[in-house]
Image (cartoon, rainbow, N blue to C red; front, side, top):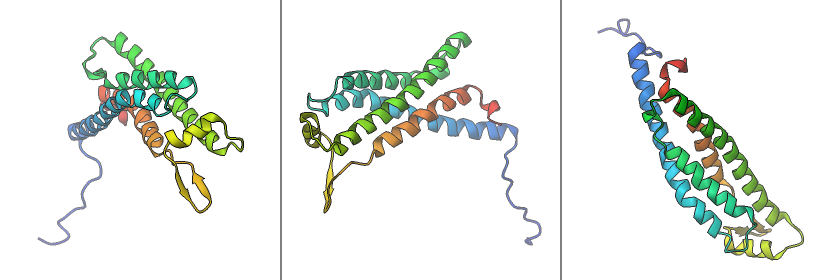
Length: 172
């Protein structure tokens, strides 16, 4: 065979193959959402415990919301046949996803404030014991919010994944 007879592979897949490929990708993304949901159900109470009883009052609300959002991610949206119920669940998932981002950002800002406060309070003194802190020559450093960043990404991904899992043809 000569090089002229080989054509470069097509970047677009034909109709049904495209839909099947998208369904596999969406099922993988949805599996990540279910894993995130399981993590949040377990992380909610642990997040509250990390303050060793000295955290602010909103940590209880944050823990409950983490568990609630984790349970939302665990719902089998693909099995809901009633369009009215599915639309309501989708609206709740969208609203909870947006609220989840604000909860995580608020948590990061609160922790950052504890370390930036020039007048240490009893809560910020305990924060050094209850939160992961690393140090270098200049003193303690705020931990990078890698977990929160990953959770934000995975949480914001789930609403479109749930929608396009139901309507893969609308991804074009």
